Length: 65
Picture 1 (spheres, rainbow, N blue to C red):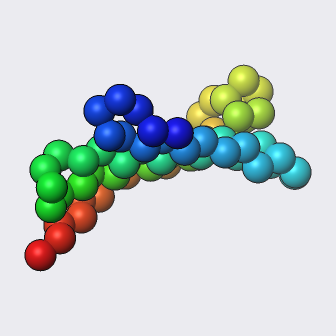
Picture 2: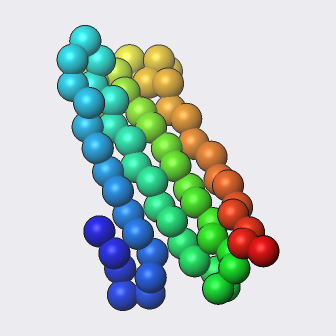
């Protein structure tokens, strides 16, 4: 999905033995710079065992030359 300011957002849910929800946000800062944020978490464990939910997140930057 694209937002009005040019960001793109994607979310997914993978269900099986674990229920992993992940999201990714791409944010253009300038014509040659894009910042990306991504995260994922086990949704079932958020409610049953929060300490074991295995939340992971991170940022990255992409420069075009």
